[in-house]
Length: 334
Image 1 (cartoon, rainbow, N blue to C red):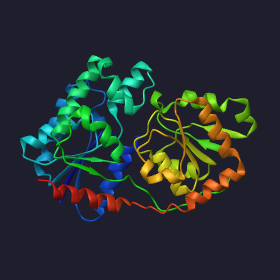
Image 2: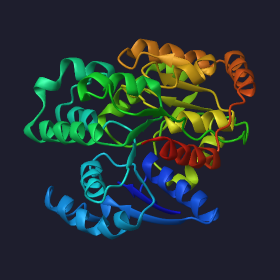
Image 3: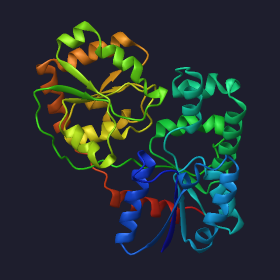
């Protein structure tokens, strides 16, 4: 088969869509399919709007010849949709984060939770953000189907984007087999990630500057490393922590589970149904709650208890399974 993948970023760029595109391509190529990969960030230095026109003509040859079209990028989703409609092709969009919410938080510093953003902030969008919202709404409504990594995100998007009549599918992210890390004497908490305001890193740094936290011996590591090194870094850590305002499907936490490392995660996440039994959750807006959970996990008895819980978590979702589920979805839509 001829498969077209459109992605916003691709390794060595860092981010979930980049890893997703790389691994899907690898699986499909290994099974004998021809995969055309088009990366929107290749045109990121060209002004907004013009880059979309250029990208449209750039992907046309691949759209014409494709049997299957998958897009992982919100910014170019509309372009892919228009191209697909011109040649009567089905196109499936796999959601990742929320570009509109991220842009708003980054611009304003308004630390609003994702679940509240669409209910209370749409009237505060800038002209650029209003345009993005309108284009995303049109693109999502005109996709052949939308694949979500969590039902939680789907439920948030349904009403504001008017997607009640759309074809929806939920496919879990990649969950690898257990690959345990080493025990470490240093109590290093990994909080690596993009330097966006919604990651709430400034508040987390405040937490680790508290005297009681320092006395417990914990250390915060926020240094970003390439994806190829990140899992090994987690394996060598004491724990993983995410205090983001909201996390739709946090790959860092999934990696912590694979490495057998206890973790603290924002209660505003889409994986509750899957990982709730092994999670330590915090209110991302409550600094005292975060402090108490860090101190709790710094205690060796509590730490070992969490490790035992993680030992019992046995859900695995391979890239091969994900790639096959994508094809099944594509073949099921009219």
